[in-house]
Length: 127
Image (cartoon, rainbow, N blue to C red):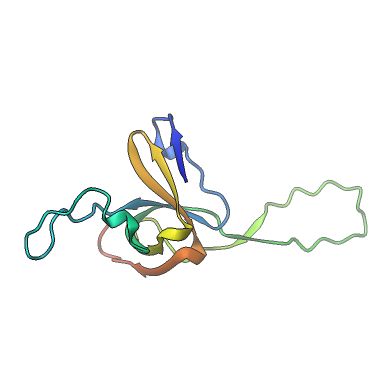
């Protein structure tokens, strides 16, 4: 599935729930022996690699409320179990669970955390 968005600012995108926004890694254009690959040949692979740009808040936890006074307004913020991926991680994910988004003429992928198979985190990369 492919979705086109016209917005210019990536910071305005809000990732919901257990979803992860990934920028796919640029595919190799040549094989190790030097042969050029046709466009789209890497898109058919079951497993893809990309960089995590944004992460949703996680899995929601039901709130524990006292039912002594149900008429009172509760202003509790929702609580979440956080996701494992962090911004800047390199993720190996299943292509079958991915939703492709074209944003500002660039391709991005949205996947649930369950579709991420492996993370590569370099702590010193952004320091």
